Structures are given as C-alpha cells and as structure tokens.
Image 1 (tube, rainbow, N blue to C red):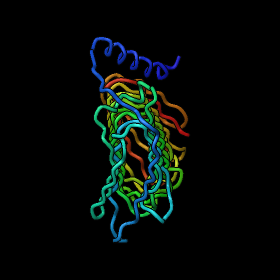
Image 2: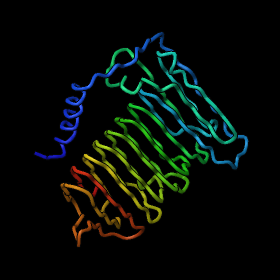
Image 3: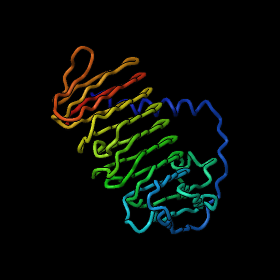
Length: 287
C-alpha cells in the first residue's frame, strides 16, 4: 500500500484525538437571509501604477479567475451571516476587500446552513496579489493575468491553484503559507516566477511545474508532517535537494539520484528545488 495515501488519515485522526481532550467554546453564529452583493472595483486612475490587491476572506468558498479589462475586480459575494458583508477600501493603488473573520475559521468543517462564497474576476493589469484567509475551499485560476507577486496565507484549506496560461508579467515571488491543507497547484512554470516559497505545518501538496519556464527559478519547500508530490515535465533541467527528518523519497519517470541530489536532465532554464521536511513522503515525477 502506498504510504502517501495513509498520511492524511493519520493526520486527521491525530487532530480528532487531540480535539477530544480539549474543550473549545465556539462562538454562536446567527445566520440570516441569503444576500448577494455585486463587487465592482474600477481600474486605477494612474494607468502606470501597480495595483496592490488584498483579499481578506474569513471562511467558506473563494473562487478567482481572469476577468476583462473593464474592471480591476468584479464578481459577487454571497453570504447569510450579516457580519460577513465584504467591505471595499481603495487608497491610491491599494485595494482591500475584507470581511470580519473572528470566530469563523471552523464553520466549513462544522457544516450547517452557513454560507459564504466569493466569485471574483481579476483584471489583466499589473497586480500584486495577497490572499489572507482562515479555513476555506479555494479554486484559483490565475492564467493569463499580469501578477507581479502572489502571496497566500491561510489557516487551512482545500485549494486548487492553476496557471493554465503564462502569466504576462515576471513574478518576483510566489509564496504559499498554510497551517494544514490539501493543495493542488498546476501549471506553475506558467506563473513566470523567479522565487517560490511553500511553508506549511502539515498536509498533502501536489506541485506541478508544467508550462513554460522562462528563466532560472528557485523553489523552497519547508514543511512538517506532509505528503509532497513534485511533478516536472520531461526534458526540463531540474535539481532537487532534501534535508530534515525521516522522509520517503520515491522516484518516477526520468528523475535520478546523484550524490545526495535528485536530478532531471534537460535544456533551457534550470529549476532548483530545496525541500526541508520534518517527516513524510516526497514523490518526484515527470509528467
């Protein structure tokens, strides 16, 4: 049996066991009528400015995709807790869409009639994007945008992140920081990043570097008890180093081990990956 498939159930059982010994007083959440607000943020007056967009999302479901050139941000927010009404603040080139987040992190796990869904579209102008969230489900299709940077910080999630088309700007940093999540990221070479950082406590992570690598790029993965799958297309030059505690490393495809490193022969830009893992499984594949 593949040990990777056992990892998340073990983590969940440990968390459940821990919760049985702890008394948690969750706040009372009063739901009301379902409300849908239109979100419309116009383009910046300064056409040469880089938009600094921050999305502060409490809990629920967050969906992002490319939009048109007519708006910086457009879409809807649907919720049935009055405190979750999104507030939009614009100061110069900084745009913040935020909602009260205290006490809502565990709602998606508990279920019930709670509802909080953002469906947003981002314009194709240069953007520095920050997503700060609690516990949620996310579907982010960011291909074809003009992201200068992307930073995601969350408590825990089940997220799909995709760059189905090349990012139209060079991305200085792509950073994903989470407590314990299940994340599938595809088309990462299309993100056009120089540096990528993944920091997590525990979870299940699939990082697929398909797409077109424009330049040499570095990836740093730092995680505790996790299952990590790294997929790099054949004929892509890649070098991976691993450090930390006990880890199972499984090689598939054209990956090979050499002198304590794991190499993938290819031409063009070099993808350098460093993995620091407390314990868990690392699968290296060519897709």
